[in-house]
Amino acid sequence: MILHKVKVYPSKINLPKKKQLAWKIAEIASDNAKLNKKSIEMVINRIIDNASVAIASLNRKPVITSREMALSHPRKNGANLFGFNSKFKFDCEWAAWSNGTAVRELDFHDTFLAADYSHPGDNIPPILAVAQQNKKSGLDLLKGIITAYEVQVNLVKGISLHKHKVDHIAHLGPSIAAGIGSMLKLNTETIYQAIQQALHTTISTRQSRKGEISSWKAFAPAHAGKLAIEAIDRAMRGEGAPSPIYEGEDSVIAQILDGKKALYKVPLPKIKEEKKAILETYTKEYSAEYQAQALIDIAKKLNKKIKNLNQIKKIDIYTSHHTHNVIGTGANDPQKMDPNASRETLDHSIMYIFAVALEDGNWHHVKSYTKSRANKKSTIKIWHSIRTHEDKKWTKKYHDPNPRNKSFGAKVIVTLKNKKKIIESLDKADAHPFGSRPFKRDNYINKFLVLTKGYISKKESNRFLNDVQKLKKLKSGQLYKLNIEVKRSNLKRNKKKGIF
Image (cartoon, one colour):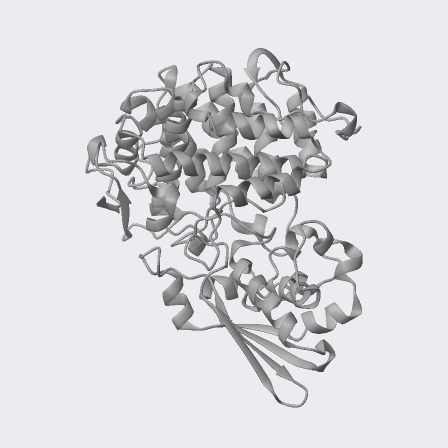
């Protein structure tokens, strides 16, 4: 790996493109490096993971809306739409829009956390849609996805967006553009221009994840994917981009992030070096914000330890800066304590999540978020007794550069009415790659079977799982096999009319 220094240059200094971060990203996207075997297997895991959560969300309102929009853009030789028979094709950017929303809606797929946040699985729907429309092979798709993960993970390591309240899709646009460029075997110049366009068009604020969180949280990554596809298309036609997008005097860094005195350090593999960043990412066992995963495990353990939950006086959670300020009481969002808040808000409230997991001794992607569940009096009592606190020891663990030492856990102190304290601590979620029972292929398959039960036939389930595990062998034009068909009568419709 090479650690690239990225800073702002005044316009009078004409920074050569080969010294620009966007060019360096484009170089590794176009280098045709050998594919790492473990990375290939992990891509397959993540395609299974994405399919699981996408099918489970097909009849949720944002996904229905995104699907209705995509249905208005049929294309003879296009891409597939989750749920529809593969003979139906749609413009790839609209298939990416709908499929990407389905993948993101439940907040139940993979994650990578460092200087910034990310859900790298968001790269897969747009890259797959372009691959289907362009009749690429399984190996082509693997190359694109592995590149996209590499770019997003390393941007997340090097550049904090949330510090300036910029949404994390600003790293997703460039990673998708790089992944598509890699898959299509485009030259460095074309990918370079597309990366810059994609970044320029995907800058948005974190208000989408603040206060009363709306359905836009599900749409946002799909929007980035759609914009990245369009950026690639324009660049392929010879169009340029705002440049240098990272280092310029009026660039993203200069005017939106750390400013003209900024110095970022972004790691990237050497040219021709195998890309392994996907192996540093992790999926979710529970449908909740990733920093809640270990705390759900803690709550389940405490459920067995505390015989009478009515005896709880208060609960203090000591954790990292990020967890305290994003999903904890440090966010200062009253909505995070409101039983009538949206599902999107509740899955970003560790106080709510911990209270429900503590009471139920479990977590469910639908039942744990219902209005009746959130309004249960005993739950509200525990929920409102919880406070989070930043502990610098946990913040340091959160930012540890060694994946084995990096931690997204917490220490929980439950104080009972008799003043007895019960303490439980966990560094990593049990399902984390370095947790007590890391997710393997069988776990991904089981997650798929559980989440798709009742939506697809056993025959279709077996067919998909068989085909996806043969991804390396899928030939040009066979990527429709990664689509999953649902009985049409089981797909809900939105009768409200829009423009399309």
